[in-house]
Amino acid sequence: MQVKRIRDLIKEGQIQVIDTEKGFTIRDLTSGYMKDSDDGYTTDSVFGFDGKLNIRPSYQRNSVYSQPKRDAVIETVLEDCPLNTIYFVDKEDGTFEVLDGQQRILSICKYISGEFAVASDVFPTDLPQDFQNLVFNMHDISDKIMDYELEVYVCKGTPSEKLKWFHRINTCGEPLNEQELRNSSYTGKWLSDAKARFSSKNGRGVILADTNPNNGASEPLLNGSWNRQEYLETALLWAARHEGFTGKNAIEEYMLKHCKDNDASALWQYFSCVLEWVRSKFTTYNKTMKGLDWGAVYEDYTKGAFDNNIIHKSADEINKDIINLMSDDEITAKMKGIVMYIIYGDERYLQLRQFEEKIARIVYEKQKHKCPFCVKDGNNKEYAFKEMQADHVKPWSKGGKTIEENCQMLCSFHNNQKGNIW
Ligand SMILES: [Zn+2]
Image 1 (cartoon, helix red, strand yellow):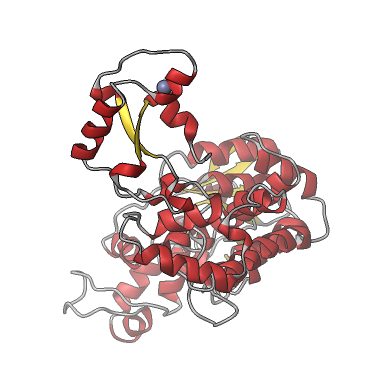
Image 2: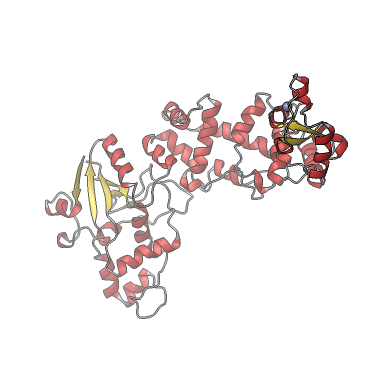
């Protein structure tokens, strides 16, 4: 791996810029900048430096700079303070791509092309100024901006050296997350298609995850954000599990298997199966449904794991059951617990009203401090009151109520073991 300052490469005549004395300036960077269509709708590349610099190579994320961060970049330039080092990769065909500094570069390009204005002490008034205005009215300032020299290092090396370097420089600054790093290793047609579906605002996967197609309402089901590759990560995790990859490298294994595919339609198909199933079961949305591991739920459902649970019923029946559960005064669970109970059938999710201590003590004395299950096993041990737990003899789900007649005191072993069996 060779890393050189761009200034030295300019001096050696290896890189041509507008003014050799000034180094690599914003004028060079933004020359021929294609007005960025980076509104989140696209994952296309963006070019600067007369088409020689690929500002957003396919393994990079879409723009995630917030407005204050974006403005801070411009203020730094206006005040003639140094920005952090930017790294380019020399593609060795006369072109370069940005390895680190994409967000800073895009902020600069967008400012120069007039997409936003900033306020600064440098201006005679506090009013935010856009660049076009500066060119007309304060061209000394606009010239100074264009002549601002960027500190750039240019790296040359094999793909694996490049990747290693990429990991290293990303440990400072705004780090890439796991999925963004994975994307850098599996570039190609398949990844581009996967990103078009799951990492762009109009991707079908993003729309299905955020919007209920049956009513057009905003009903998000996934955690994270699509532009940080987190929707893609979820889709990959589910599809990987479906194909039997379960370890901690499941996503890498799936990507390795599929990265040479022509497109990501298999990934899309499984993902849409899962979410369409969720939408078909829960017709009344509540926000606790956001971020559940629906892939795991769907996988268990199709394998018959929930055959006796409410989730097997039709959407209308499920809806009625939810309403009934919500109005039952013995249930103190939040909506999340109710959804989990509908799926898993385990009434511990419902946080049923507890037996009052008075009742528990009466039953404890009636049982002579013994656990009826232990007694059945021939163990007549007497427990302290604190070692025992009050339990519904007839489970709540089978109509058992939270009253003395339906209370038994169990040792913690048998209370845990009993679960839902009756
Ligand atoms: Zn026991």
